[in-house]
Image (tube, rainbow, N blue to C red):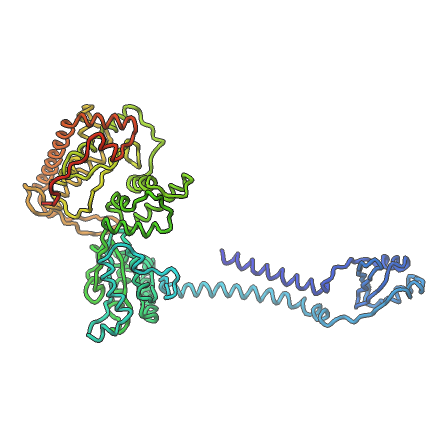
Length: 614
């Protein structure tokens, strides 16, 4: 429909242009008033005419005042015959300058040819555009099996190199070898080393897999073919395989180069995991990728980079040596990496003098590079909304909470009873987190609703942790249950506000038993082996490698862990009830307590002598 409208507009515009040209040449480019012969006779008698030019069947009259007129006459009549027929005084005619002109060749031929030429041109233009539309449709049909990869050349102006990628030091060191392979393959071939076929980038969403792949191409200064795994797959069987062949053909012509396939799990899942024949197209595409990677000429300097956050679902044939020879792990950034990433993303943002990126990094454990970029962007938006041109520390901290828990729900007005219940709930979390030795220190307590939470207690670690002990997990469960326990102790009953806490506590207790082997009763083993079978995007199968009797014991152990943690939380709340009441009073008055205000009431958190996991 769009092409039809476009062709009609082009055809109509062409018609108007031709008509305008024809009109111009027909009128010889002049605008003169057309009058009758009676007007001409009257003007001759009144001696108003200075000159007459006779061309073919037209008499062009120039008046003494300078105006021009055109008089049409019959083909057989002459000017002198007209004067004679109207009995005009010869002396008046003698005063007029009379000039007889031959009709120009251009006007003559235009008058003869254009009536036939214009329809011919219009029909030809119409046929041309119709044929062009048909050819376009045919060419698109022929291009259906061609690769949709975006090619970034060597001269790309927004080139990314390793120094533009903060953090991921180990990953960059690993990929420097790939860059060297692309820059100087002879150095490796001389000692019998072959170019790696593929490199698999593994990491959580937002850790910078795509950016790192672009940096490899930028460092090596080679062409970069980029596409998503889902771009191979179409509803027609065989199209994906055709696109794979076309992609590798283009890459070999541009060698040395890099092919980057993002989200390769879209086509690289284990074969045979689908129900019925619904995955034939995806599996054929995967088969073609396997053949192309294994069929490289040893001297072909093409490296395939692929990224995924689901390595567990990839087909074993894709991971064997000779295809994806290397696997590069991109971990979530630690404290130093987060600070470096913040420095990169804050280059074009006007930060206030009081802004400390180190403090921001300390307050954002678990944030990926994409999360940190989004955090600074949210901070800039918040500053702009407040009509300020400088981003303050307050803007950044507010954005941290917005990213973690959602925006403030200022329109949600609590009754005094609900506000008091929320205050005791959050004060319970804060008191237990502060006085248990192995928990993270409290950074902020608030009873202002954010996202789905009616209030929140923000606690963050002083340093990055990679190992946790059973004691630390039990204390974490105690903190999760502290709000529930505080409500029960103060009001004698609980509200629905503890639902999320109970769900998280139960899930953590189950992991201690089934995943981490921390149950003394059930011993050091795991329970449950998930075997993925995807149907309509859902996992529909989980293998239970334990009996119903063990399942009952797991349930009892979960309840036991939760009871121990709840008893621990209750003990802290009872012994520190005076602090609990002070925190509640402060929250009822100010609604929010920052770390400094909170510690003025309860004192500094006592650090344990050793926090090493046992």
